[in-house]
Length: 219
Image 1 (cartoon, rainbow, N blue to C red):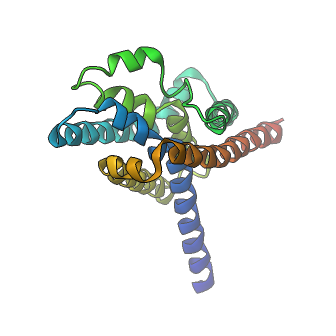
Image 2 (image 1 turned 180 degrees about the vertical axis):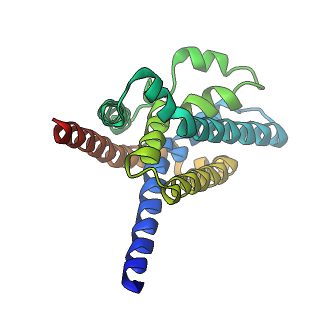
């Protein structure tokens, strides 16, 4: 019994770390640093702080919201989680491919959103909060992790904790974005984004493989 409990604890910790790293990679707050610094140029310290708090709050709200209701949307539309894993894996791989090329994915940031972000009060929502942090890729990832392992309460709690951990780390990175940008510069952030892109590509492939395995098993 003790050995079984220890294995379950190790498995839970491993799952928590896996979800945390996956979400951190796809949110890529380090990659958002140059954009935040550029969009908040000329802002006071208080204005920048409000933007960061709003962006993190919006991103966390969207991730948690879709995490909780996503599976019910699938049920209404008649979509199986395995189908969503395949489609989501392809989308995540697209985000990763763009990051490996050193550019911000169009699924995360468009020119229209860039124009909307010119208003000081709005950039915390668009584009920093969404879709730069809580974009289609990150929303897809959190829905899959929340549902694909099991529908047990401990699994759901672990994903919930992972989301909160990622958002806390993202807040700290964005809060010190000016210092980070001065330290690593745009080149450094691109290097980090490409490393994250490689990890995300592997996650996307794993989603597709898991989805295909589930589909094949039901045939």
